[in-house]
Length: 331
Image 1 (cartoon, helix red, strand yellow):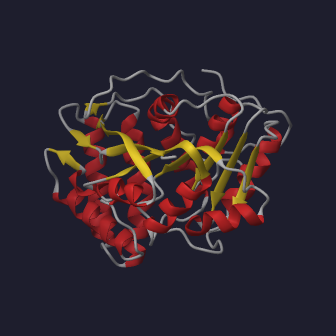
Image 2 (cartoon, rainbow, N blue to C red):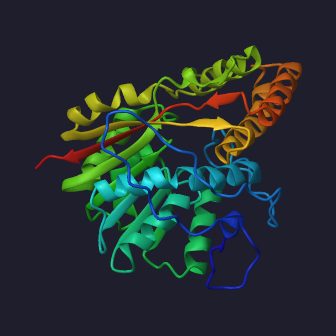
Image 3 (cartoon, rainbow, N blue to C red):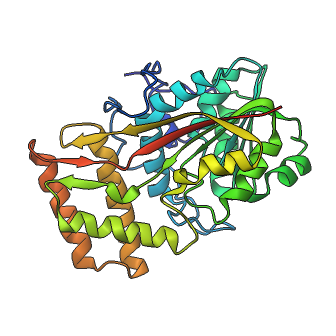
């Protein structure tokens, strides 16, 4: 499998280890469907770059260190098919302006920039200065002058974009696994709506009923850490059921929901999708221990159970359902 070629010689980053975007998979337009596991390779055990800061101006509940950067890289590759299909449904085109809300280090932003080409514009917004620095460095290395990352609060999009000379309205906005973490999703949706042209669309990939994530057969160790994860997000103002609120919020701010779908995936030990589960829990359960939400023994029990599931083809993990909501701005 070929890896992404960069335009400049530099130290490798997590992006270097990713394959080029797969041709998006075409799914039927049903209300609920099961999505197959993708066939991306697992990430390498480490990256040859200094760790990113874990103390940005506004701390992520998931952190911004090298472990989280590695996890995001894998996550993007495994869910890229759903993203590309949603963008295609939203009529993404050459020359468009796209806003990537909560862009992180830019894994989706790079794909979007390639799709709109140098005739378009992609602006990624994230509160982490470390992630945005990585995004802008990679954009330059990849010769993507149409891509720009801005450090800022997604609750204040219109003011941030205006202050950064990016106030021209956008054709498309994308928000993946962002709204479940913010304290005021209404403010974010209001800002997105204000930043879109009439007829512009917003694509959201996020959670509803996160607690449904479990193992089969059920294991107390796994259900315990899922509950602790929900508790950790809610303690910081997040909402793992956010997609249940979004249709009404879009309506409130002058947007009409065109499409609601659910992507339900299952991971078995031999699947690449299981690596997403593996990386997620190996990254986040130690943080739950640090927060005092689980004990070290409970963490160890879960990781041991995951190792067992990985080796037993009769067991599997039901992943949290990712909901896709696409709304269009009236006018």
